Image (cartoon, rainbow, N blue to C red; front, side):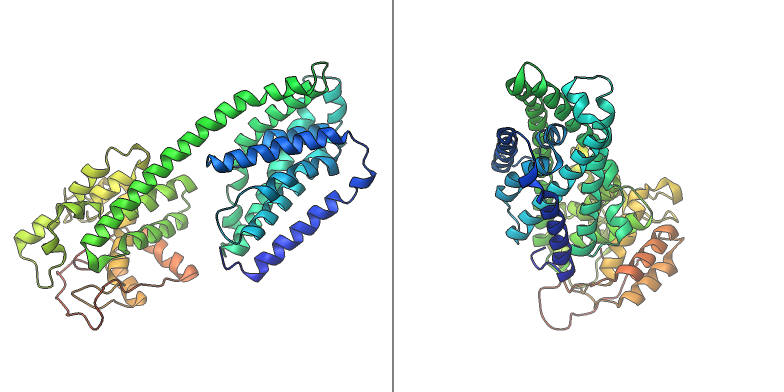
Length: 435
């Protein structure tokens, strides 16, 4: 996102103006400013600590406690220092800080406004349970909704994602953690206004910090798995130099098919991993066979056809891959039963493998290899449609055709050597020849 489109910059500017409007009444607000300063310092301190330890996300309990305790402009001010001072790794750093600060300011202001309008602050002062849960719950829903709407807008404009897809699932994915943070924020606010005061309120943060640390450890473990996946793919690319970049493109095409089929985001991510790792078993195939320019002998082809089983052995211990492991093993099966390694037919072939098979064949045909030129996209799609029902699942082929008609495809030349490659006859009945 280094080259941010002008319309995305304009969107950020509009949200920043909205944030300034939320803060404009501050001079006329009557509130204990030491409370604002303390909450803002807590929020900023957490942001700094989280960035140094590479924790994920923003710590919302303090912001929501501010929304439950303070007038809307003062509550919105609590979010500002932490968002503006937090370290940012990706560029443009200034624009990212401004965006986060404006987004949180608007979200907290809206939550505080709704909370006050529903009598929430009086309920907090009186410790009126369970009634205090109602305005707090409404405020949390509004906070989550505002953040989701703003996030969807920036995704649509900055990443050029269709609006419906950009917003799809954002609210529901963020609702559960924000609700938990909202309950912690409400506990902070009630204790803050109780005879025990702010010191007791701060104790609420201790179990939240522990749970946040556990959550961060999970993300670190996941990042380590992804780094392992990248290392495996790079090893394959180095070994099979003529297909460099093929795995990443198959992962992208698999995602396009999965999205077109309406799969949920978690499964789309798994299928991306499946596409990326589908050829990892080539690490067990002799390099001379992978780089051979001439026709393969039957014995050499049998050796290459062992790579799905090699790959499955390599990834079967990575538990979070889920059905991606089945795709690695079965992506060369064919609907008519003439594929390998087990000759499965039709519905016996896992759905993930049928997705990756189409993505793999498509990229193989639209990339230049050592033994043939790349085919045009339209010719590759015609070949996929011709083989649909015998080799490929027609649903997956149709989904890829629809996705490409909307988003297009930019095939890359993956052979390292310049010039025209020497053609090699394709194996009859095998789309994409050697994959």
